[in-house]
Structure formats: structure tokens, C-alpha cells
Amino acid sequence: MSNLRGYGGKRRMRFKRKYWYGITIGLIFFVLDILFLRGTRVFIPLMIISLSIAWGQIWGDFFLEGRRRKEYESRFLDFVRNLVGAIKSGMPAPKAIIHIGNETDYGALTPYIKKLANQLEWAVPVHKALRNFSKGLNNEIISRSISTVIEAELAGGNIEDVLESITVSLVEIKKIKDQRRASIHSQVLQSYVIFFVFLGIMIVIQNLLIPYLTKMGGVNIAQGDVSEGIAIGLSAEVSFNFSSLFAFLLSLRAWLVSLPGIFLMLAMIQGFFAGVTVGKLSEGDMASGLKHSLILMTVAFIIMTFAAG
Image (cartoon, rainbow, N blue to C red; front, side):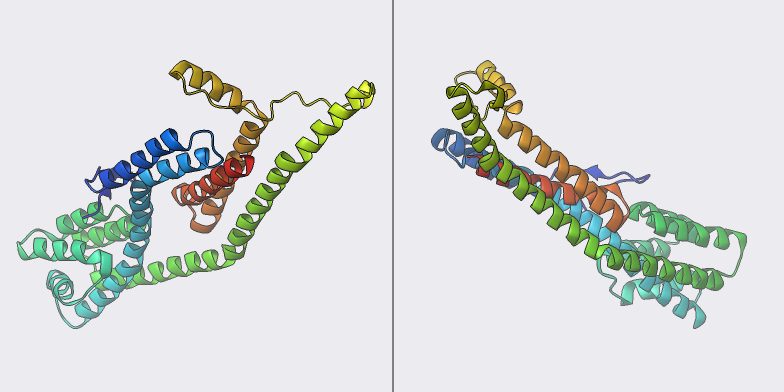
């Protein structure tokens, strides 16, 4: 069973014991980074890498669950097709579900179908077993399809015709999603390329242009040409103070309004919204966009902090 499940369209996290391994390793790297690499060029990048290791497994399971839910839709189409074939051969719907549930492998959907078949073997009413099946999967497309089957079964309609119409609908939905994913693929790659070009421009401005302007401003002022001098009002370098928590917070506040902090925040904001946009276009939901946002923001943080020294 998955550790990320829910009802009513919500995902509920269940903390697993294996997460402690990643958290422990991440904390070890975090402490070693503070003790031995404080003040070096890799201090801040290693800090975010340590945090990524700590919660990486949790995020990984979250996104794997999203992929598993997509597999549910694909394998549910195979299940409905096989069910239609079994009913056409003369089997009643409950026996057809039991037969194909015990004889066919449906990947990630197999445990749910076996549970459905076991409930029918124990004389649970078909509509109740199907409703439990739908709640367990918590998938909008599958829930609508199961609701249609339940209404037809309760009304005494022809389940075979209903299942055939559901098969056609599922095929069309899958085709539309595949076409959208294929058409948007180039735009996804383009968005990633644009983001890395943006990072490159930010690094050039921060490490080359700003120091050059600062130096030129100092030379002009020293020569008495104040009118042409270029004054840079933001601090270009801020060191963190770890002597106390209050001192650290003050240094963090000063860093956030410094040039490296502002450039980093701009890169993080760009990464977040670029990822959300890419996910919404390619997958159609915001949760998928968080995957892209997480990747872009982590890469932006590591690159910008490392480039800033």
C-alpha cells in the first residue's frame, strides 16, 4: 500500500521509518558543513544539499505517487477492456471481475483489483465493492467511470454497453493527454533552457558587471568626478555571524538585502514560477508543477551561492 493516500482528492502523508535514514544523513552533512566548512566557498551550497538529502525521500515518494496514479488510469483502461470481453463471453459481472482479477496482472492496479475480487467472493454487493474500489484509488477519472457503472447496475441497465462507452471515453481522454504532453514537450525543454540562460545572465551581472561598475565608480570619485561616479548602495558581500542566534538572524537579514541575497531571491522566484507554469502546461495540475519548481529552485540555489562564493 502506498504511503500517500487520501480521499476527496487530497493526499495524506504517512511518515515512514525509512525517512529517518535520509534525515540522519542530511543532518550529519549539515553539522559537518557548519563545523569544518564555515566561511568557505562551498558552505552554503553544501547546506542546501544537506537539506535536500534530509527531505529528498519524502518528496520522492510524493512524486512517485503522482506517477503511480497516472499508471492507475492506464491500467484501468486494460481492466475495463478485459471485463467487457469476459462479460461478452457470458459471465456475470461479479464472476467476470473475480476471474480477470485473479488471472491478469495490472501493475500498480493489481492490489486494488484483487481486493475488489476478494470482496465479491465474500458476497459483498457489486455496487458497494466498486465504491470501495473507487475510494481506495482516489482518482477523478476512475471515480466518474465507477459511478456510471454503479448507477447502471442499480438501475438494472446493460453493464456491457456502459463499460464499452466508458472504454471509448477513457481512450479519448488518454489520447488527448498524450497529444498535449507531446505538443508541450518542446516548450518544457525551452523553459528549462531559458531558465539556465537567465541564471547565466544573473551570474555575469553579479560577478562581472557589478564589481566593474563599483570599481569604476570608486576611480571616478577618487579623481573628483563625482557627477559621473556610480554609487552602489547595496552591499556586495555579507558574512554570516554564528556567535549567537540573534547575531545569525541579523546577519541573515543583512544578507537578504545584499546583492548576493537579492540575486538569489530573483533566481528562486524565477525557478518557482517557471516550474509551476511548466507543470501546469505539461501535466494539467499544480502538483506536477511543484516537481519542476523544486528542481529549478534547488539548482538555482546551488549555482547562485556557489558562483557568489
